[in-house]
Image 1 (cartoon, protein in one colour):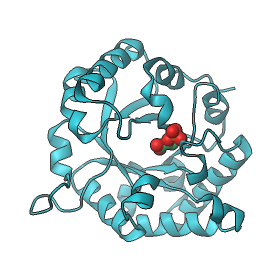
Image 2 (cartoon, rainbow, N blue to C red):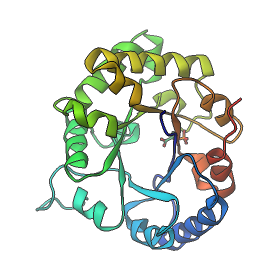
Image 3 (tube, helix red, strand yellow):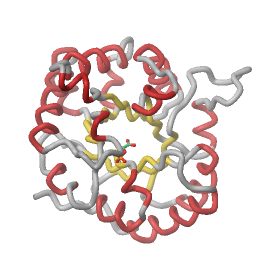
Image 4 (cartoon, protein in one colour):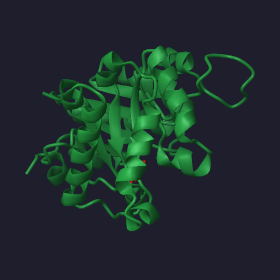
Length: 252
Ligand code: PEP
């Protein structure tokens, strides 16, 4: 049985005080929720504030990125031990906005992945095709390359710890969610891809999240899909009531 994960990516939104208020509100709204992992990913500057508010709650904390070295002369970077020190248990790796705007490649995503694992952070490994790649019928080729290269050198025994997040770039922040058919097709493809590289039980235990314009009004249908084990939510996670509704999805 794969435990669902509902994760909110706050991107570059919220000041420390706004993030603190959001954390308190989510903690209040979601205190009774069991049966799924709830993760929020505020900007680096707000992790400590959010951590203090969420201590002892059922909400977990993720960094939005990490550098692969632990310490050193790398101005502006954040390392795994730093994330751990402010209460992070998860970290996003390879988000499409990092790939698009900040030069992340499959090779650097792989380095970040290994750094996350080395520091006992659960990677939420993001990947997905662009609209151009989909229109060119290259979706499966792109997903295969991103997943295989992102996981390169990761021992098989560690794979079940990694959370995969399929996020078609054309669906992120656009309001254009993948249809349930598109999402299930991609997730089934990814599970099959995992079972080609690892034993079937590993592929079966791997959680695969969907991300891309998930909202309160489409989460129920997405969570009903057999290979969707959770969602990664951007915009809609910035409103406490809407994120709380997403966490309390009712698969239909
Ligand atoms: C994201 O940031 O990972 C994301 C999926 O954003 P949105 O929900 O806004 O499309």
